[in-house]
Image 1 (cartoon, rainbow, N blue to C red):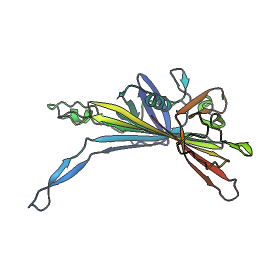
Image 2 (tube, rainbow, N blue to C red):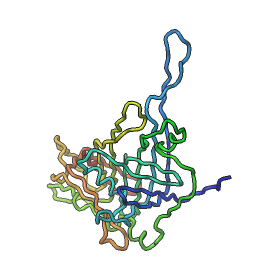
Image 3 (cartoon, one colour):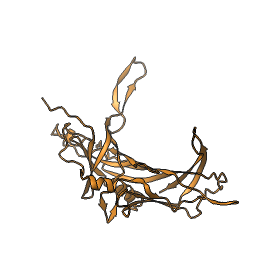
Image 4 (cartoon, rainbow, N blue to C red):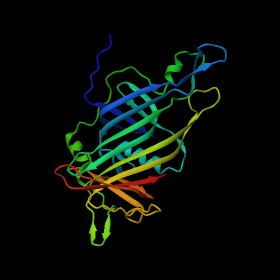
Length: 302
């Protein structure tokens, strides 16, 4: 009988191009799906059978602290932020994917979404989601090989790796709103002249990948990165309803940099840059016994 497994925190290991990092996830979800459709024939009652209509796919999604304890290409930050930055700025369409390992399960997946939040005097949390397609090679003479090439597979077990438990590093390297700044974003009013105060920001980016399938093969022979859509909702105290028709952003320069910092060593920062930013929405909300805040939605496409 297998040992029972209990998780209060999930250690998720992500490996990209020879670099790996273990993230302390507060939750983790793994799914595996297969698409089928029934086939009907005129003159016959009921279906002739259910047949595959798409390749089998898997998905892994998890939430984790916005850590900056890693160092990738000389830049501080977690490996998910490093991966997202590399994909959106890539001129090479052919994607290699990342190896995801959790609770004895493993699979090679492609980052489909990444998001995090920043607010004053609050710890930042992030979430990521990967789509998994499988390796693409199955030996017809070996029935067991079809399971080795599934998008994600493995026996549930305690992980043989653990996240960094150094409390000093975690306290220093977890994103927090205390020293984080968004200096490149500033709403200005001309009459009377006034600058907005930023209270928080919610950031997200999503990626589209196009798997290429050969005849006689279920899993893709290669996968191409196609497009990315980026969005940031900034909360402040100025309502500027005069959105320009061409979508010019509030700064006029189309670039926004969010500098995420930790609590102790706030000289270390993880920077998220958005280029070609357009403002598409402005709204205001108020709660009981609270100040009026406005939200501005900024978008960028790659």
